[in-house]
Amino acid sequence: MASAAFEEIVEDFEFLEDWEDRYRHVIEQGKAMEPLDEALRVPATKVDGCASQVWMHPVISEGRFHFDGESDALIVRGLIAVLRCLYNGLTLDEVLTVDARAELGRLGLNEHLSAQRSNGVRAMIERIRETAAAHR
Image (tube, rainbow, N blue to C red; front, side, top):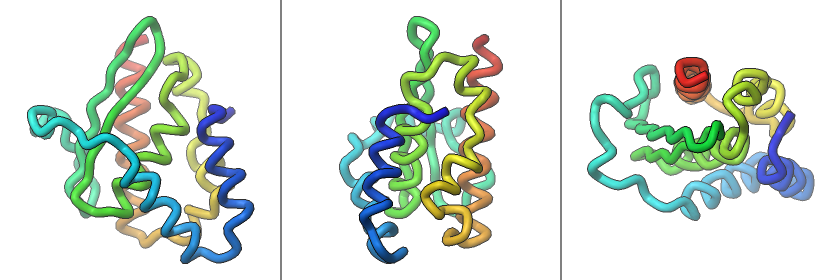
């Protein structure tokens, strides 16, 4: 189950022939995000398990999950943007039913990220799931 915003990324990736173009597209997604307010870059929002600096600030409003994020690495910032498309706007129950590995696999990300980046993505997904579970 993926949001319309994530489906748009899937469609974009279908038109991008090679991984270099897809990689650039992920980076562009990150560049298009609004930066996370400096005041929200605190230990409580920092995601452990990422090789880069990563902060995620979740907001639950009217039973819907949203988060903003930031990273000091361009590709990771792009991965945050992809995860935002995957999760933002879902109900808390929907967040917990998303098979993020399968959805990201549709983009080919599972095969093309380094082990460190893959661990970081898993850490971000785990933080999202923990947050949704805690607010149900």
